[in-house]
Image (cartoon, rainbow, N blue to C red; front, side):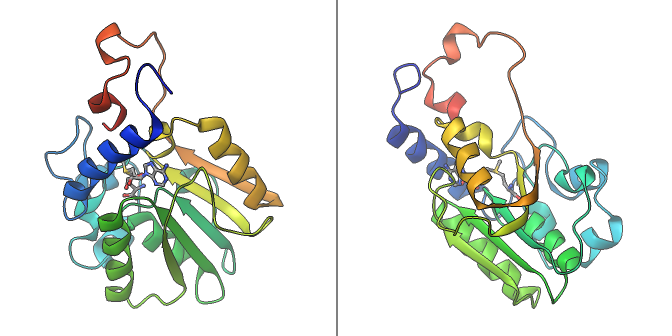
Length: 199
Ligand SMILES: C[S@@+](CC[C@H](N)C(=O)[O-])C[C@H]1O[C@@H](n2cnc3c(N)ncnc32)[C@H](O)[C@@H]1O
């Protein structure tokens, strides 16, 4: 429990919110989203331009995890809270045919959008799973790099999420996350607010 809300209530609120965002993030957040935000955060223009259809418009993250370290050809990469899959697309281009990319997201519409976006991009080395990052369905030491963008802040059990990420990373693996953090006390009216938890 966090404030007076339970994990199942927060998950329900998150699913409700991200169901809407699955096709376009436009107008859904206080922070910049879409193609312009991706460019501003340093994603390569060529990669943005080559992404299929609406994929860049689904961009609703807070930073650029690829700026924290290189993904090499042949790497196994996992994106936790992958959303509609823009970062999966970027990672798959970097990991190449010899690499593999997995994405996990708990909102069925997001996982479905990511799968269809990867199919449209012709990427067959990307696997999208519907599930929770507090209980990752992967073997120990499976990934060279775990990325995440604007997702882990939504977990009520952050330590458990990090334990799981640590478990599935290879010993020399890296975690590259972009996320939002509190740098002051949460205003009273947001404590226990489902709207704030799912924002
Ligand atoms: C702000 S969006 C980030 C989108 C994504 N990183 C992208 O590339 O577009 C947060 C995502 O995290 C997912 N999420 C939130 N809590 C989760 C959890 N406990 N387990 C798995 N996914 C979760 C939501 O369904 C949503 O798609």
